[in-house]
Image (cartoon, rainbow, N blue to C red):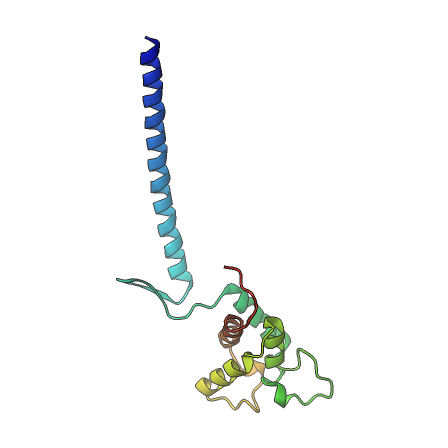
Length: 152
């Protein structure tokens, strides 16, 4: 009789473990689908038959950084070489500021690329001539090409 109770208990515990495992798998599947849907809604991403294809996704950090730059530095020239003020600080140009934040010298290349794509004269343009998205792209590309250690 005691052995029957032990066997029943083992079977009951095993059945409960299987049931909980199944519930966990179903919940995980539902949450994964919800997260995928949120990512697709909030970014420039399309779902293809082969999987997810990103056109170009700009991080929230880069967008926040770009919004700050547009608000605080709208009259600043894009490149360091066009700074006309006698004092030259890290925020005297978009190039200097983005390079300083990302500890690199890559932003000039991205600024030139964006200006060429938009037909802007980089010698005369200021931060206000760029969109938040363009500045965020410059920041993100600069960060991705910097030698800063990145957490994965």
